[in-house]
Structure formats: structure tokens, C-alpha cells
Length: 133
Image 1 (cartoon, helix red, strand yellow):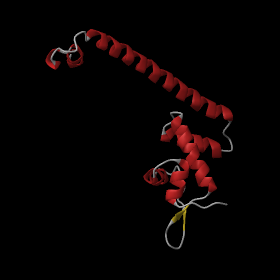
Image 2 (image 1 turned 30 degrees about the horizontal axis):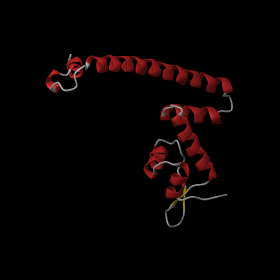
Image 3 (image 1 turned 180 degrees about the vertical axis):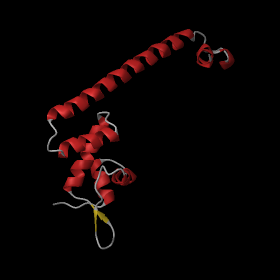
Image 4 (image 1 turned 135 degrees about the vertical axis):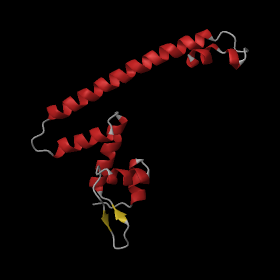
């Protein structure tokens, strides 16, 4: 089984060394073994776990939700449906954020169209005036 120092595993996964330490602090990642020199040693299981965390974050899951996913993964009574429900909740959250972003986009487009004279002083800029209200 391969062994990694913290910098090596961070590079392998594509995250920061401090992020790994933060995940350890949150107990998303178990405390690593240490060599006599006190250097942290990580293995393939840690690599898979960190890759899982990174991918789940890319899908929009929070660290709290990722902790829940890990809990469901090790709970012998948990079912795929439990994971599905958590994922459905995340999808609803993403859909709400998309809706909010579309509303923001609509307002920004409207503000941009109000700016008909780019040479006007910023004191008279309709975009800044709209934001001040």
C-alpha cells in the first residue's frame, strides 16, 4: 500500500495542506499515523477519502453534509434511499440558488441597459443610483 506525506497527498488530490489539517480537525479525516520523526503518513484509504470530499464539495455538498454522507456510508442500517434523500435536498438547494442567480442576472442586465451614456460622471451613474436606493 502506498504511503504519502501530507504535501504529497495534498498534491495528489489537488488541495492545500492546510485543508487536510482542517479536515482532520473536523474529523472528516482520521488522525494520520506518524513516523518516529513525527511526520504524518497517509495511505490509499486517506487518498480515497480526500478525493471523495473534494468531489462532494465540487457537487455542492457542505462539509456538514459530507460528514453525513460518511456517516451513512459506515452505518450498517443506512440504505441508498437515505443517501438519495440527502442528495434530493441538495438538488433542491442548488435549484433555489440557480433561481436566485437568474433573478440577480435579470436585475444586472436591466441596470446595464439603463446606462446609456458611458461618459457621464459616476456621480450620475444610474447603476450606482439604483444600488444606493
